[in-house]
Image (cartoon, rainbow, N blue to C red; front, side):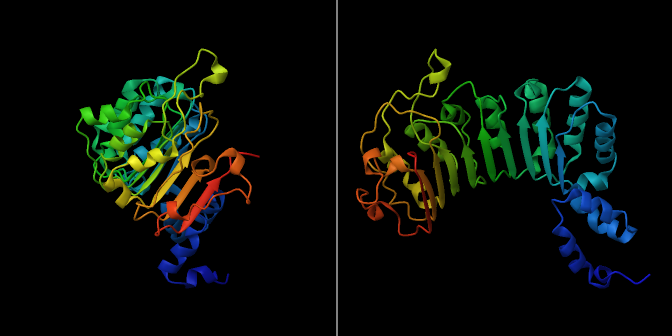
Length: 325
């Protein structure tokens, strides 16, 4: 049988070509079965990202996890873990906790799925008490009922560079929790926190991270909960786009990416100010809702006001998201 052209290339070239199949797991499985040589090339890709999103309780689920737990080689290949929590039994928690303690080279962790899955506090915190968490560079927490104290534990990880959180926390004053712990994380570069904070809370929060360069969050503002669930996201204060200029000078000089989101909310009113980012000297990418620069009756080309003097000279990309059809 003639030798495959792939196998005539240097090992580095073979690995590079195979890496393009990183998201095609069935193709990787089939390729690994062709020969021991190809299996050695494919194996790091097969285990680089482990997704635990299948139904818990299945025999194949436990066999898969056990193969990683009992092999230091396979465990050392895992760089990213995606855990989609579903209905689970104590055996599931025990197995996953054991797996987490074996992943010494884990760099990225994503927690999502059913909030009930993460209710046991011991399960949420036990992994953070081990040395395995110290290697994490990126943590994403999506739709999980974490408290502010939980987030502090993650953000205090020694090498963390990126934190993305859509928390259902029990308190909106995250900055007070951080301040009370004297938190200062000099490694964090990217922060995504999807909740509305007052401008003072946002300013104090960002000041905890002297080297932060990328921020994604909801527009600053205070809101209150209503008895009517249909109105839970109505705001009790006016939208004030100019408030963003109250961020500290250190934050203004460091930020390169700023994304502000304003989805499914109704502000009490608009103070008719406009967002002035001219002093954000390093800002390159900006995404903001249209209300930050244009009022509703200005959303036609003939009525739009010039905003160039409100933008930094360093800006390379601007996206203004229209909130009006």
